[in-house]
Length: 397
Image (cartoon, rainbow, N blue to C red; front, side):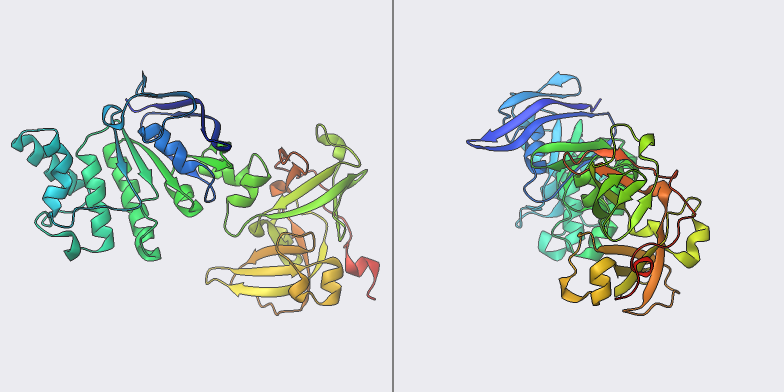
């Protein structure tokens, strides 16, 4: 069985804490991805599981056996690294079988394992090739096969697709999912690419500054982020995050107002500073408001930048004073005066045109601005018959 448990694992380097009190319970057969920005501690966490780095504090168990102080060779794991690191003077067969030959497996067992691994990663007929005769994707499959022949309890993969081009990365994501299904193995995977994390994982562990932010299925992290960091990190493009102040009738966001009853939210009252979060796909033109069961009040805005993406258009909207001034370079992503919306590709929009939009209240998130913790992921009780607010309500100057 390939369960992996980290209990209060901490790794310090003098005055730097790379991993801070990490607790993970990875079930047998799961595909778990550690994801976060560069330097967040995800690779260090993986290295403590592998035994390449000894934790300063904490306990690690694999398959029910404590391995905290065991060397890598005794942990029942196999690693695939970002650097493929094949022996250039050895053919594919010798590269795959190298570890088995070091452990003095007999020839028949080596042949059986190499043939099986080559079949799984689709390298049949290539065992006599040299690494320089293969593509990047084929070489990566050799590295994966080299791990498979170990028949480990757990596969540890540290950004194995980072050096591949974009098209090949997409292809290899599919290959890794197929591999996981076929092997029914536990895989712990490290990446900074959230697309890899979202598409391949049973669960993802979002890490920032060495601390675990959320450990949940990908869609849960997307639809119900635990805090502001997860909300801003998961999703491409990022969630709109707009700071505001709770009042008696809802949320004052300076340029417009979102109406709801603050009394329906625990621990939130007038005067509290909160951050509203809404994803671009949950912002709708007023003409499409009938697609939304619980639309917010109308928001006046002006189109600033259009980004056609083929299957959708990303529309950067300006509100309030920036919108009145015509936007331009003063508009900064993530401030209270910008809103990103995605629309169908057949929408006829022009830059610098006035529009009205609504939010899907069922998918509006509120976070405590001070702590960053989530308050709610649903404001469907928001008023739906609110008159337009913003610059039109205030008049044009």
